[in-house]
Length: 363
Ligand SMILES: Cc1ncc(COP(=O)(O)O)c(C=O)c1O
Image (cartoon, rainbow, N blue to C red; front, top):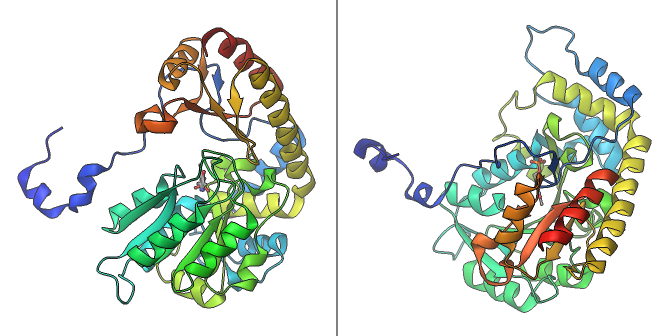
């Protein structure tokens, strides 16, 4: 669709290189493409969530200060409520961060972020939409942080924000602790965001970094553990940072049902959510073994998905699976070492079995 001239003159030029996010449309009996959790919550938990979500008064705005939700998040993370900023998914928290920090750092010619490649696309998209430069440093051959490359990028670009997803999407790898520390040390004049969207599936977390380093904040979300419909994510960081970011947040960002259901889930459903995450982690290992038996390569994963190497070009395997009713995620458009990689979300046992049966015929 051509953009009218007057509009082109008004729009940020960076928008020309961006695309609206459009999930693959169509009916797929098995959807293993979006790193959501399969339906594992008990009927009782679902009924209780539905009851908790109902507003007391449909005519009133939600709590602008998110008091109960931030208290519940803080209790879960072992921090204080004023160290928590909650948003419409971690996506919104990323937007808030980049709006607040979109100014060039002293000595830098442009505002920029540094992140890895491949990684979660929203860091770059949000940065570009604000006119910031995005410097991507390729992960090493084992999909871990390339410390030398990241240190060079930090020195050269002087970024305002460094984003490290750990476990990373789409590779599933937790960053090595010593490498992450080295990057944080090199970026002591920037804010380092450690994105823990998948931490519920990992053997250790990195929250202690927030106490250890004043320039580190951690992102978390309810989206990957069975509550993506609520769109609740948050940042844990220094209270001075949270206070500044809170000036950018829309006052009524989270609707009443999301605030109430998320608060209930955090307070009352901890055991059930942990059991669901443990089931996914077990299924992940079973699925990995099945894929390896088929001769595919599978990177070690600490997330709710697998990073799978295919013999045939990944785009062909993706199409063949989709034609058989199984939707996964392919990154072949990026080319290079991603041309033979698929990201497969762990589903229910029967969904994973179906994936194994279909991929055996086409990978
Ligand atoms: C690393 C990472 N961070 C953040 C998000 C976004 O999560 P949310 O649903 O909380 O916006 C995702 C979603 O895929 C992700 O992979």
